[in-house]
Figure: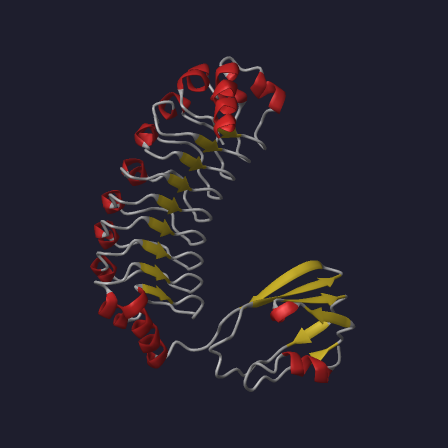
Length: 316
């Protein structure tokens, strides 16, 4: 692929300039989805991009002596007031507002114009570190997507979103949650994966409508006694640092059906017989801990657990 063809590939962009050297071979995937470079030497791209209303994300994979590296390129056009106005006009009709991948550090003040009618707000893949207190004005919001930002904390006002059903906070920098979060009485799905939690926030144990809790890929070492108040049917604790399951309290989670604790530091003795026999859990994902599958199968109470597992499979 020569320089001329390469430029044509990016013809959809207005004003695209590039410089490159030492590039033996590469190919473009469909819709500019991925660029794969073989034996990459050195590469410098300079894009002067305008009129990017259709700019799709793409990534570059480089294979060289230092191994494979992946560079993601996203929508970098400026979030002007006119762009915000256009999105707000659309949201007036659809009740959905998407401002993904704009490089935003804060939520625009103009969003308050649709706070009463909005049902779905998606500001994922930005650089937001804190939420404004006016987030509490979105009292009809059902879905709030904040994944892949730089959030370090949440305001207390988030707890007044009584109609919120889905909250995605994955891939941020959170290590705690405000106690007011327990006030989200309609919340069904909470994603806290890939953050910096060292403990399970107590407030999530008191979410009365919570069905799915994903707090995988954090740094949690143990579960608090309050875990017994969890109402979830699925609890994902994969890829943490659990060295204690606190099964004596977890057994009291009557709604719990699926427990995922893969890639932790658990011993087989953490799965006490009372939990295996008397809990309602019908699926335990436990690979990648400090015991083998045969060790788990020899535990007292395993047969009772296996019976629940089999019965659930038959219903599917």
